[in-house]
Image 1 (cartoon, rainbow, N blue to C red):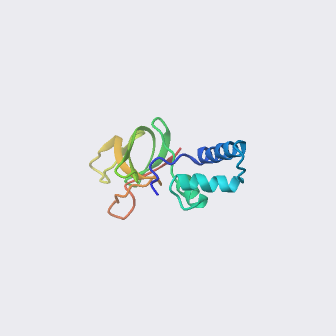
Image 2 (image 1 turned 30 degrees about the vertical axis):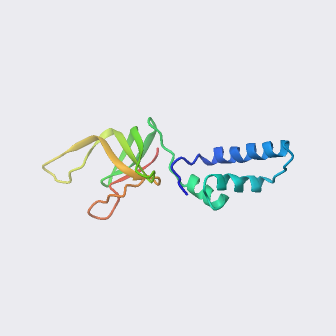
Image 3 (image 1 turned 180 degrees about the vertical axis):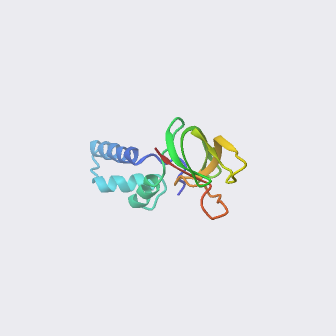
Length: 143
């Protein structure tokens, strides 16, 4: 199943309702659960529960959204300035503009502030790249 362009759950349910109404009008009554299963099959899922899990577990982000999270272990609040699906659709490239610059150096006599960063995140909002202590470099969630 390819989940690059899976619609949000509300839209999937609306698709099932439209399908059920259309088939009922043409003389082919269908239960609501049967309509949900047909929509799942149309999207290449084994069943409705599988499609629901894929669509429901995706972090919904858009350019202009306010987000919060951690960059290199440091907390931030930011605005999304860029968002692109990359590769096979399993990851997104995100560009963030922090409300307040973040000092990414942990040394008393030196600082390096970042206010705009880009990274690659999965649909769960976590980067696949890790810091030296094993934590994701970037973690993003809605503010």
